[in-house]
Amino acid sequence: MSFEGKVVAITGAASGIALALTKLLASRGARLALADIQADALNKLVEDLKAQGVEATGTIVDVSSSTAVDNWIASTVKHFGTLDGAANIAGIELGFTNIEDLKNETWDKMIAVNLTGVMYCVRAEIRVMKRGASIVNAASLAGIMGRPGIGAYACSKHGVVGLTKTVAKEVGAKGIRVNAIAPSVPSFAFIYNQANSITAVQLRRRCSIDSWQARHHRHQRPRPTPTQVCLSREKVRLKRLPRPSRFC
Ligand SMILES: NC(=O)c1ccc[n+]([C@@H]2O[C@H](COP(=O)([O-])OP(=O)(O)OC[C@H]3O[C@@H](n4cnc5c(N)ncnc54)[C@H](O)[C@@H]3O)[C@@H](O)[C@H]2O)c1
Image (cartoon, rainbow, N blue to C red; front, side, top):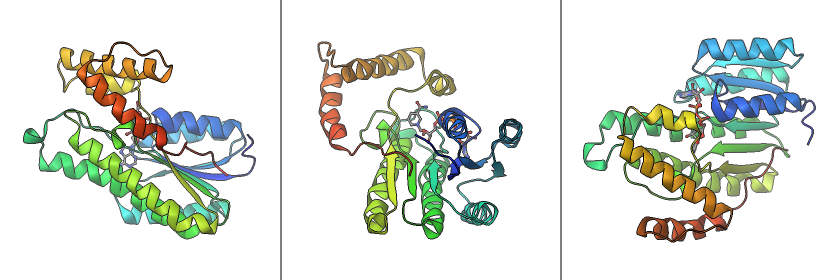
């Protein structure tokens, strides 16, 4: 699919999923407005893209600031003249904590970045987008199901799913699509970042649940344990979700 000339705004572009998306869209001709809080990585990325002939801007944006997000989207439209697509991918994961030990600061930070940040972005983007535009938000499998120790993260991602469904219905008639992705199996980096906050046993258990989910996707169902039966029921709901759509 060609993105020749399309203008796409991406948050969290300095690493992970958003970085991979940035490179993919760049290879397909998109013009990119990239945002992140990691200045060095973002600047290097934009330099590399420009050296390859890609039209790209890099802006330091903390998505939990409505002013920063509004200014970024306004300057993007001023620079490129339009906004065809947006991927609101920036997100954080602050380790595993059961509810009785969950700190107020952890909850507030998680909701501020993962949920309020996505809302700020979607709101600013919808205000300037025209018919045919498309938004994709980063939810998670944790936005559809629960797991011990991820209360704040799961609530933030459930919020992203609710926000996405609501806004999709608000702007669908205007020809703007809003979808969410729900990555399931964590990347090695994602697990590695959590390794300081959980025990080896917890990490192994989580990895085995994730690898079970991967096998489940391929219809190779091992004998279910109580946890797996629970996940299996969740999966029925997951299957009913609309498939993430593509840009434009
Ligand atoms: N990788 C996975 O396996 C996985 C699984 C489920 C959901 N997700 C979700 O997908 C998204 C991307 O995950 P990833 O693994 O690529 O993460 P990542 O940590 O590699 O990248 C996240 C990016 O967001 C940026 N960021 C963090 N806080 C920010 C803020 N306040 N403002 C702007 N940018 C900020 C970071 O600097 C980083 O570049 C996240 O929302 C995550 O919750 C990932």
